[in-house]
Image (cartoon, rainbow, N blue to C red; front, top):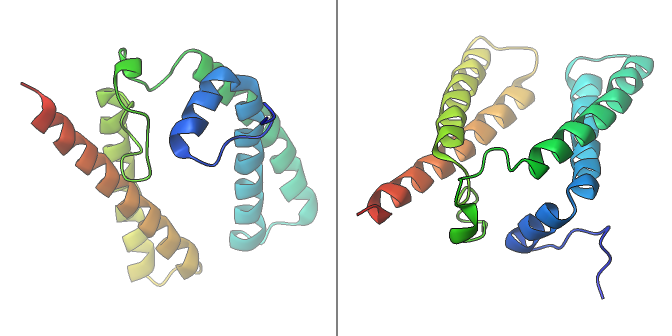
Length: 155
């Protein structure tokens, strides 16, 4: 028997688990957000330890509460999300709303342009810029693939 405090490994099962346990999922998300921001500050901005902790702990609390509340309201999902397949590794946005997908396209294009500009101008953080570009490319690729699937599925 699986504990309600541990998320399953499969993306589809994890989506269902998140819907059933939004507050626990929020704590996990807040923790990942906190660790990510702290690592970025410590490595990318060379921030002092006290600053990393001062930003990381509130980020965990705020991220947990906001993510949990947004999950409960089904933010970013299609109105009929239950009629669509669960997300998979090859189709992570199967239940995302069209408006959410448009925002992802815009954000990934802007992020890619900024990352390329930083790489071209030889920024002080080439690894962070390259990683950001890779994430933006993945995001744009998966969103465009999802939008194509949806246009083919429409009658």
